[in-house]
Length: 270
Image 1 (cartoon, one colour):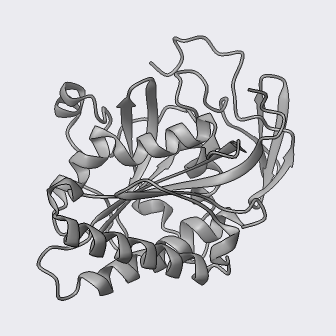
Image 2: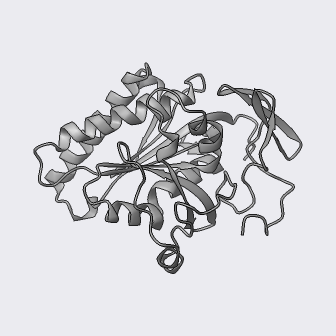
Image 3: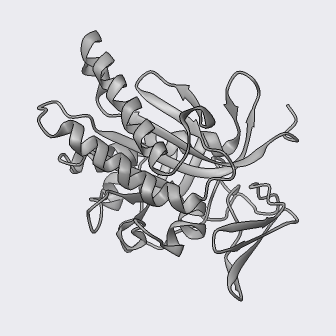
C-alpha cells in the first residue's frame, strides 16, 4: 500500500485497565464513561467530536486528531481535562475507571477501514506495554497514566506550555512485539511515576531505564526507525531523516518529514 496519502497527525490510544474482569453491564458503563471523558477532553481544546477520527477498540479508543490541532494543546489542556473528568467520575466509585493513554505523532493513512501507519502501531503499544501496566499496578490510586513517544516528548512536551509538566515525565524502555523504544511516562499531578526497577523490567519485557536512565531516541515501532540525533539550530531544532529535513520552531512543523529513518543500523539505541 502506498503511503503517498499519509498525513502527519497526532495519534491517541486510550485503554481501560482491568476491563476483562467486568461483567456486561459494568463494561457498558465503563465504555460510556470512557467516551464521555474523551469527548470532554476534545471539547476543551476546541475540537468537535465529528472532526476526530475515532475507532472503537472494545475497552479502548484509537483516535487521530486533525492536523491543524496544536500538539501543545493535546499534551496540555487535553490531558488535564481527561484527568479531571476521570477523577470526577471515580469520586464515589469503589471500582474506578483507570486509563492508560499512549500518544505519538507521525504519518497516518486512513485506508477506509481504519488508521494505518507505524505511528499508529507505536501509539497502541505504548499504552498496552508491560511497562505501562507495571506502572499502573504500582500506582494503584492513579486514574490516568500518559505514555508519550520519545519524539513527542522531545519536540512538544519539552517545550512546555500551559498545563504541560515536562519535569514530571520519566523515561523508560518499552518492549512489545517489534517495538524497542524509549518512552516517557507521566501521571498528572505527580512529580514522577513509579517506574519499575531495571532488573524487573528486563525480566518482563518492560522498561529498562529508571528515572535517571539516559533516554535513547526512537519514534517508530521498529528498532532504528526513530528520529535522528538532536541538533539545536538557533530558535528551533533541526532533524534529518532519510534525506528529509524537518524544523520545529515553537511547535510549528516545517519541511517534509516522513517519520522514518532509513540510514540507521539496527544496532543504534541497543
